[in-house]
Image (cartoon, rainbow, N blue to C red; front, side, top):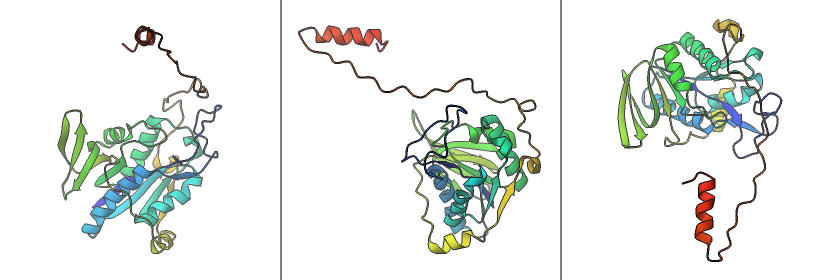
Length: 258
């Protein structure tokens, strides 16, 4: 079995994250960048299956700037057998539609049996890429899984809903996304770190994939404005002089909270 795992470099969630007000993009030079934790968990799902099923091939896939090589190497150090890095200057600021088309082209080229992703990244938090990939690829999909069991012909998982837990099963090939309910990724040891330096890391461009990011050929979402978040204003303090209840009701009504 061949499994592709989507991995993504994001600004460190424990640091200050800033938006470039000129481009509307996350300012990656403002702090540390790391491999997104949810993508590490997705990688752990694939590696756990590979541990129990010798011969399973795990490939880490990322669409990221050239500077993200170190983060992709971390995925190799954790245990992925190889990696694919899609990098092209034309992809700077790519929207969800272009991102999905590019990733789908890279996946289609590798012909995997299963694609595993996180349910949403900690930077964009859109949460729609897994479904968009399944549509592009014509694969079955099972999203937001809190438990996963990979079989020879199908994937079974548990999805939390407003009404309880739901058991879902999809045939392979498939795209699945997992939540933070899945275990943390294993920590890369010294042997893994050294081995990562020799593992295959294929770098692809848009030309290699036959995908265009030209807005004239591939309509994209257009950013019209970006503004800094306003400072937090002081709250409303109610002094009880016998009319506190009336003041509270008036505040709730004015703010359309009742």
